[in-house]
Amino acid sequence: MENVEINHDKLKGRIKEILGTQGKLAEKIDLDETTISNKINSNTYFTQKEILKICTILNIRHSDIPEYFFRKKVRENEQN
Image 1 (cartoon, rainbow, N blue to C red):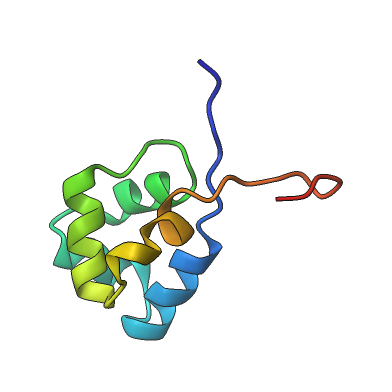
Image 2 (tube, rainbow, N blue to C red):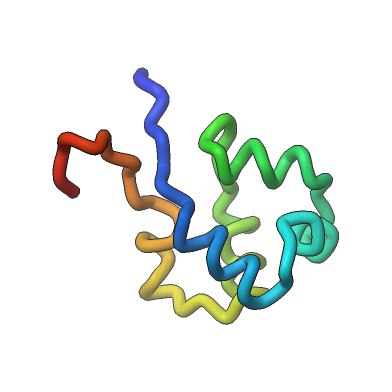
């Protein structure tokens, strides 16, 4: 199975807007900052439980979850 890279730019922006840093989000969901960084950089994946906690903390509607957590990263010469 190929490693799918997810575009978390929208999530990064929301974190910065609401909390300021990824470290603050990590504290709120009881993970270390390295773990959050790995998930945001598609080295590992968010669990469903983590996604729901993050949505609550960042006021993300459940209907917007795909935009924040499942938008595939595309190469510059490709379209969405």
